Amino acid sequence: MRTTLVLVLLLVCSLHSVHAQSKLRGQPATLAETFPYLDKIFADDTTRYGFMTLPEFYLPLHYDMSLGLYMRNNWLAGNSKLKRWFISNGVNDPGHMSTIILTSFHRYLNHEPIDLGAQIKQLQNAEQTVAKRVDTMHYIYDFKEAPSQASLLKKFPVGETIMIYTAAEKQTRSTLESASLRAFAVVRAHKGEALLFEITHIEEQPDAKPMRTVGEIVEGYPSEVYRLPPPGWKWQ
Image (cartoon, rainbow, N blue to C red; front, side, top):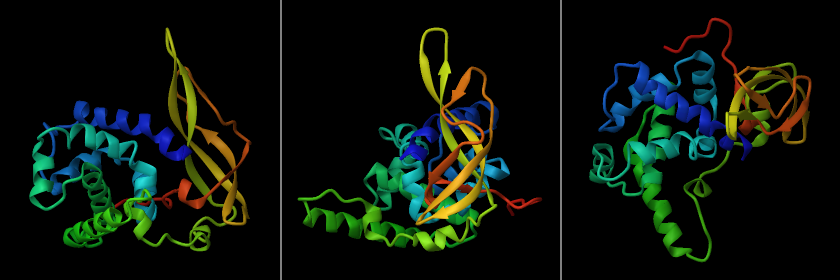
């Protein structure tokens, strides 16, 4: 998915910035200790609101190969304290560990019960089901019901301003590298289960050439875009 790919560079850079600019030291050793780090990553209102209003079902699709990958390669690598904490709680797969972190932080932002025991039980049940169906590849979210596209479309009425991430090319001295830029768009129409939106602004980044242009009409699904916070919104 395009959204997943373009999020990789942006979120990894944000994570490195967290360690460079904050007073956080070392790495989290428990699930609860991951929250202050994630608070720094989703520090601005737009990014935080977009994450917390994304339906929980879609968290892995958006973040597994960006933020999730970073956590698995850094916080959950080798014999880290956080990995040992998860193992002691019955979770052995690093992919499931990162899913639990994402899900738990999402619920924390939405003031919902984290319900760690139920999350673990669901993952264990999925593992048992996959083991019995070895002829096909399955993922944990194959066993959860996705929100209907109709219910998602209602959250993005015509005229609503939304945020997306768009791929870009960044020229360095020797190579052409991938980058990602935040862009803003206005929903112009609903087309079946998809949205048609017009790009109105693309954030600039030195030497980065976006793959989209202002004024371009793009078709995308509600699960691929982000809602913007209302004026004056602050997370509490």
